[in-house]
Image (tube, rainbow, N blue to C red; front, side, top):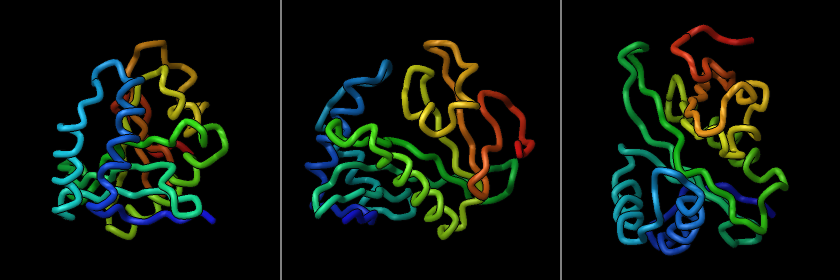
Length: 165
């Protein structure tokens, strides 16, 4: 059985393991359990910063994602950044990332976020799992952003605010 719920402080060690996996494949960051633990505690201890969601399979955390809150001056509304999305290696490629993403986008709406944005590297397979059509024009090493509003992509690697239907 799959469950997606907010993470709790007691799960920090497992979340650090997942972040180690994520940052080991990043170009800009590297695993540092001390820093990752400190960041997790900041989020988990202050819900106004954001929320961390975990995907559990039969009670075991197989994935996580952070939803960090901010304000868009363009919209004059609360928005969020989606960060630290990772699925443990044995569970990758089975659709769990898509399940987690779809549920977190729904939760962002519950938190009254008017937009959710995700930045990624072109060689990050998450980008292609989310929207291969939008990501296919990125060149290796290029950075881009996917923005969601009402579960639709708003823009990708552009400054456009027009909905793409």
